[in-house]
Amino acid sequence: QLQLVESGGGLVQPGGSLRLSCATSGFTLDNTAIGWFRQAPGKEREGVSCIRSSQGSTYYANSVKGRFTISRDNAKNTVYLQMNSLKPEDTAVYYCAAKEYYCSMRRADFGSWGQGTQVTVSS
Image (cartoon, rainbow, N blue to C red; front, side, top):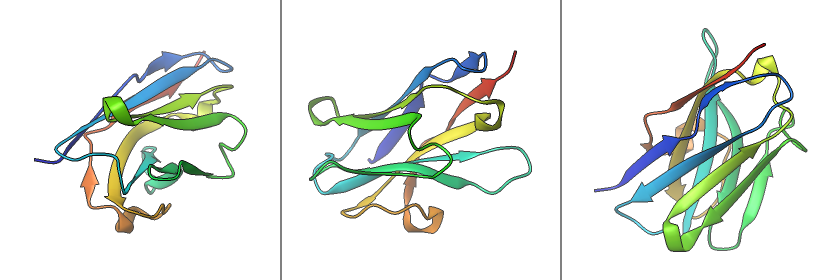
């Protein structure tokens, strides 16, 4: 059974850092793209970053480019999202999701989702 489990969220001050993890099971990361999405209260879920595991190609939303870094450990079937220089507007529930092959930043393209982890950036 395909499963994704996020962890690593929490409360952090502006300018701080967090590293989110997405542990996967039931499939391998080969030929799979993993995306990170976030949803703030009252807003649509938006794509944050994506990594294509077979080649390591990475993609970022403009709002996080230069501050967030996505990476993977295929041996551990885990994808990470390192978030630096966090801002209050980064506050949201963060989700990881899986699709076949190619990256996308569109929610509708992903069929498997984790339960989400809360990130709160506040002083």
